[in-house]
Length: 547
Image 1 (cartoon, helix red, strand yellow):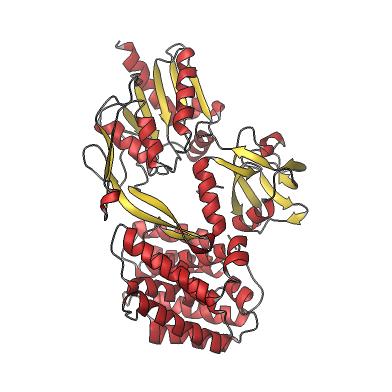
Image 2 (tube, rainbow, N blue to C red; image 1 turned 90 degrees about the vertical axis):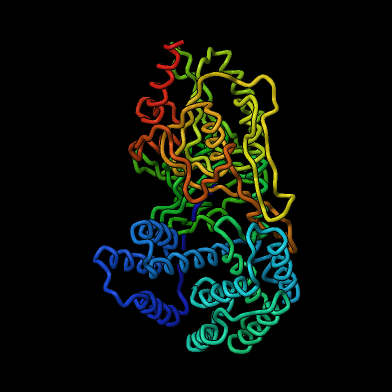
């Protein structure tokens, strides 16, 4: 489940091909600039390439992104980031059961229909024009990198000679790199041509080739648009609904240590079995998972309601191992895991909102009523770490706090994406309000922050928000797949958009990292040490004292 997730990988065969590929990769990366780089800049490039060589794609992505903040014009860093993202996507696909079992076995004709379908959806719905040439060029890049990816090679062509693989890669670069195509028909003609090349030289399945163009072509779009496998589409719908079958954890792979439990959902099988945030899963049903990727582990953890799974956990505090058996069941993900009065003397409530789902407004109504009965006179609304969710849910919750006026508007390429949402609900809450945000507050969280600021409804405390000011639509496709496309941008009530910029808080606070993590988990014991919460308490106490 998480986004929020996040995810890692390994291999045995095709060692010669891998070594040859990485030698060329390093040489290409450093050939981008004839001007000597400063030592720190060179070190960043080398570290990124080292992470890639070890196939630690998430570490590479994180390093390249941070390094580009310091050296935004470094071409080696830019291409390293792009390369790592493509490899990460390839490896996620090849650990996705729905991709392997439902998509790869399809004939070339079905894969080509999926290609045409996604091209049509992009032309009709994507927020900006994208040429077929750009889409196909990104697909060619994805196939080029896939032919240097151990997981792709082992699954599709484990016996292919390294020199044959390199020959095809060279042909892709020399003959097809950024080759112009004329519309959808031209795109299909070029992809068919490359299918014949790869099948003739490598015996590579035409479907595997076409699917690299389907998925890789979407790299021509923004970071929030992608082609979704059947499994990922179902996961997305489950996230929107706030319900899924499982054990109720959010996890992140830490190679050599296992799966770090980032969060354990309240009332879930995992919590009932004694799992705690910070623990590591080291075995799943007796299988060592210390070097599994998050996706590989997720596949092992999936199962039907009522089925059992045995986990071996390493305690975060003591380092001791313990075993627990859990029964999978329907798990409800609450948008508001915590809502309680934390200053009874002044009646200051605290409400933690972790997402914007279908039932978030109903949860909010129940939480606010409960806080009111406990004597709430002011509210701290915590959106830190909240990646967003449904635009309609953001509008509904804002309608509880803002009496009238525009809450948010959207503008896209087509008329059906141009909307303005206004407050229309009687009986809004007028209590003094402080909104907590940070760099992981995105999308719907930023809709809330923008409206709160423009309507001067409260004070924003924390760090600059993420800067995702766009609307995504989920369009079902062929083969039980889907396409997530950015179809519009959204604007605050004053007409401002803060894409890639974010909203700066009224009062900036820089907490220590452990305090921040504790705050995300909503641990009551952390409030005394949480700098954001303490700042909010001080503000609200002063406001209440003036009444």
